[in-house]
Length: 543
Ligand code: J2J
Image 1 (cartoon, rainbow, N blue to C red):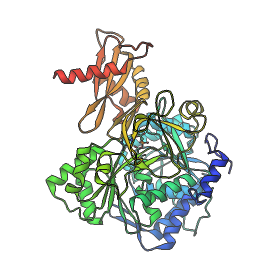
Image 2: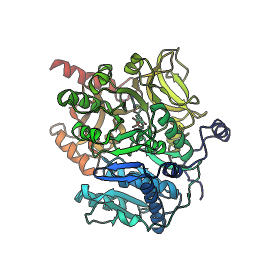
Image 3: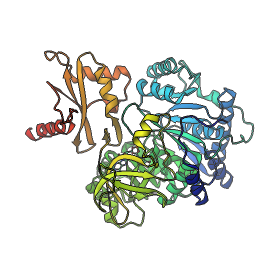
Image 4: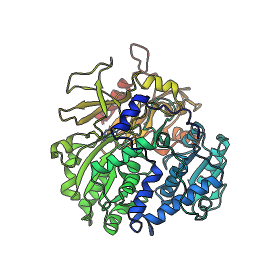
């Protein structure tokens, strides 16, 4: 298999060190399930609704999918765009891909034509897999849009029973023919994850079997995930947090049980927790708040729950301190990124650290710098941008050379764009960011991408998006617009319809729109977004 072009490997010496120190163990992600299945074939691996799979059954299904991919001419090194909710097919497909050396490209369920066509083209995917039933007509539109925009896409498969411009997912399941010989190489990319937001169009991050394998094993260790664990996957499993920290894959590596929830709301999750004896779950902060409020109201049976992980955006201290008394389980804060670096509060950390910090790095080998605007370290305890280099933080985005030159330092540090403060214990507090992303309760709104979409509206002369504080979501988005014709400026309704027609994920739609005559400018002539944010704050105060 030729090496994948567009992937930036770690330098040879660094890679050798990670291998020698045991971070990279030379195994493949396809092997992780095989090992668990050999240890305990009869244990329950996966639960989705009324459907259940033992490890032996899931393992055999992964083999059948690996063969099915081959039967459709999908070879090792090929990419497949995966756009599925939390259904068993998602797990089976991923494991089959790993075994076949095929790279899943993980789109989020909320993504629409705009994101999907971009991801299909960027990755050069040969197939697109979507949920046929749930999406109905929408699914047909997406399938047509992706195949029309990305000529590399030769196959579309859909789960469910609805007819559409696709083949049924079941065709990917070849007849059982015994164990599929693992076709992957540990040093090569295993999966392409979507970045939580950078400048310009969405970026992908290629994670290797070696690096993601470490991510899985170490996440299991730091969360106490074992074969006795029952992990509820309530956030979209396609997101790094719910996929591998520990989420779905790390739990399977540890031999525990994965329970896929159709949604993260308390009404769905609480009965599942009681029914399946769920021991851990990962949530974004707005959901933590929703769970806390619902638990106070409903007094559900959450007796089995031992750990609630909160991450994706900053959890307020007040919410953090309610977790144990209200939900009866421990809290773990997680500050992670699809780019690699993960920080966790530890299970034996003092309560104050758990309530007030976003954790410390997972690996001893994670090299952390906290730097000022000039790139030199800030004094110990000061706030600065986090730079990182380490055994599960790849050295470049996938096929994004120009961007990589701007975002990675010549010696391989990723400039995360997050502003952090480091305590003497090594714990980090996320204080803000310098990157142009709005963190809407864990959903990342890529500002530049949405601004460009707004500029395509005939009534928009110029557009600038800023965040504003929100008690539940942490932040929401406001689009400031300069109209082409000040006498008839576009309304929010028009702009939302425009973005929806372009196929932009719903969480990127601006929560507010403000029409202005001109943008305030900084001394350098750039749009003064701080001034725009202040004008929103004044508006709020004047109410
Ligand atoms: C503040 N900001 C946070 C936190 C992420 C585990 C957990 C989260 C993600 C994730 C992930 C934050 N407090 N606790 O992949 O495995 C913001 C930062 C970060 C960006 C990454 C995981 N946790 N953030 O959120 O790739 O700004 O990953 O750089 O979606 O989310 O976004 P994403």
